[in-house]
Length: 144
Image 1 (cartoon, rainbow, N blue to C red):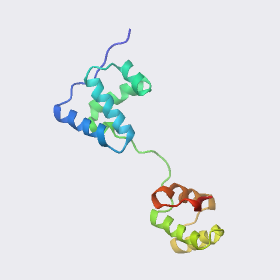
Image 2: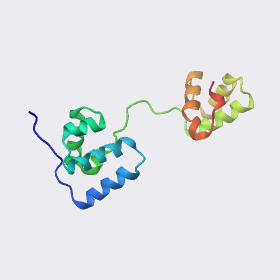
Image 3: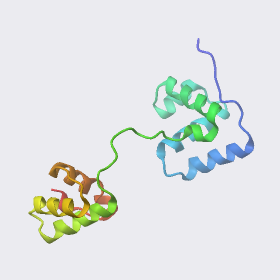
Image 4: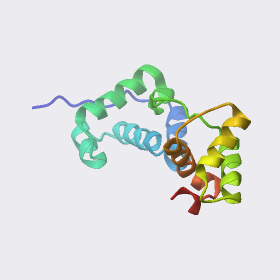
């Protein structure tokens, strides 16, 4: 039989902070962790939380431990490792403008962008940058 474990009772101020995160933060994972802590504080067991959030019980335990050691900050999502993007949003806008001038000549746009920024990349990287930023920049058709 598993031992029952709950979060150590947080202060009312921290509970209110967790509620604000749960009801309005933009990071879904952060909201989910805050919700789990709130439920644990109300007596929901790890097994029940596991069923609610459809994650491993070790994950729930890790959330509780992170909260108890680092507070609300411990519930934030950790940075995802990986290479930073080559091109900034402004450079992608510049690339979009170059492609709008001559849509079928991505290599010419690539050469012009390289001359303007001093950065070089393959056409696949350019297409990936355009596709990644298409929602933020309003680009849709240029990424085919």
